[in-house]
Length: 329
Image (cartoon, rainbow, N blue to C red):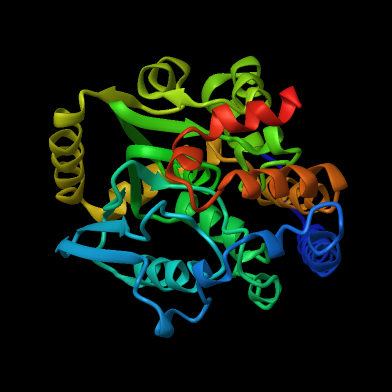
C-alpha cells in the first residue's frame, strides 16, 4: 500500500471543499429555475432545521453495556438523513471514538420499513454549506463514514427496511452488515435520478462483490432484497426477520467481551488490506457535487418531488420503481 503524501491529502481536501462550495452555491439558482423549482415544490411546513437543540433527537444511543452500544435512527416517517442529522451524528461519532471501554456498536432503526434513506432535499442549502469539514478534511458525511470504518470499535449494521442512498453507504462503511430476509431493501438509487452517489459506494462495493455486480447495483439503481444482497456480498448474511435481532445481539455481545486491543489491532490490519483510501472517497463526493449541478439531475429530482418524494410513503417505499418511470418518460 502506498503512503499518501501530506501535500496530496491537503490538495484533495481543498479540492473537495472548493467543489462543494461552488456546486452548492450554484444550486439555489438551479433549484429556483423555471425548469425544476425543486425547493418551491415542497411543503415548507415539512422542513426540519439543522439545529438539533430545536428538534427532537433523530439518533438514540442505548448503552447496553459499557462495551456494547446500540445507535438507533429514529426520524419518522422515512428516516431521511440531512444537514440537521449531521451534528447529531457527529456527536455520536465523537462519543464512539472517545470512549475507552466501547468495543462494539450496532446501527439499527426504530422507524418501521426504513433503516436509513437518502439525503434531505428540502432544507435551505446554507444548512449544508455552513457545515465545517470533519477531521479527515472531507465533507462531514463522507468524513463520518470513513471514521466509522477506521474506528477501533467494531460496527455492525442491522438492516430492517430500506437502506437507500445514505443508508446503504452507512451500511457499507460498517464492518459487518446483517439483513432481514423479508424486510431489508438496499439500493444506490442515484444514477436513476442522474446523480452520482456521494458516500463512497463506488470505492466500497467492488471490494465486496466484484466489479460487475457493483456496476449492476450502481447503474441499475434498483432495489436489492435481503436474499440477493446476501448472494452478492452486499451484506454478510440475511436472516428470517424473527432471527435477525437475536443473531446480531448475540454476535455483538460475544465480541464485546473480548480484549479491546486485540479487536482494534485485528481490525486495523484488515482495514489495511481492504479499505478504500480517503482520496477514493473524496473523488466520489466530488463527482456527486458535480452531478447535482447538471440540469438532468435537477429536473429528475424535481419530478420525484412532484410525485411525492419525502411525503408519499409509496414513493419512498418503492423508490426503485419510481426512478424507472423517469427513464420511461
